[in-house]
Image (tube, rainbow over all chains, first blue to last red; front, side, top):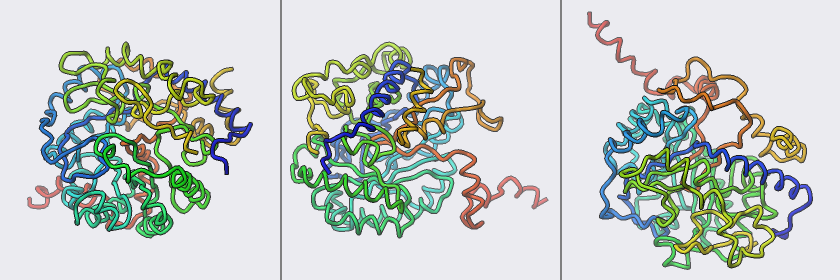
Length: 357
Length: 97
């Protein structure tokens, strides 16, 4: 299939969706809040977009600081049951007060979830998190043992992640998925890896490619060729049609003819539209993977809700992105310059998914 | 064109995105057993079709709804029920008496 070709039916739907997205932007109702509670990590992954370290030199944000913002500046304006709080890192399990943080946000009526590499998820810790109201969790698993351990730089990481997945899939009340960073080396193994996940009882599998940020920027071998990228999308599309596991491509990037065939939704960047984050240093932004020069404020000097309501202009009006290779692209009206995290410090696009198809 | 019509047309075009959007649109107030917000400034939150929450790059899947959670737990064997059901801690003192 020519991945760039978009049929008439899909074009109509994309036009309709663009209008709906514009309404969503105008409304900018907060439905997801990341709390980057630490930058510490118990692994040192080759592809880490955050460049996390065992000792990042940045202190964790005290729980009390986050709760103060939640109580005084967010809760008065939202229905907590409709705002998902995601604990993000670093590796969140290195925080010893994670269960307490979970209990506190649960007590306030917010659902919460976390992303983990599984290294520190013991049975006891898992029970504690469930008791603290954990509702949804994602585990990173980047391939079979050899590939995963190579990416993660730790010989135990695969086994621990697999143990974590086995614990999680046994919990019917918990939403979960497995997240895989796909490299070129992984492409020939996708079928077998998918079969393994199905055998382990995994129902949802999210795959994404590595974008040039953090440590991943320094290692071009982690990135896929255009042909491998198309193979990945074809694999996801085929797997979704089979229906044995809910595979999907990550939220980033407009995918032309693959739109609505490799994800549950058309492409949209929700950062700053329905998604905000409080970074470890107090910075207020969209998603946690967006560069610091897009920060919109800081909880230690600004009112979060005022920032959410009155700033975020660069997130909600993307005309500034219509330059460089996007300047005369006919797809701009659908992609609006791609995900916010794909722009470098001066706003230039680092990576166009559509042009790789 | 109104939002509902756009969603309906998108659904007719065969895109599950639109269908799930309509399905997920809140039709009635939250059930009584849901935790209420702590403060009152929620009057502006109206029941209307909304685009579904997407799964973000470093995010997680949306939580399972309460009704689905209960249904799934009922299907499971007793030994897989959550710890709250396994450990009736509050009953311990009464048993000792």
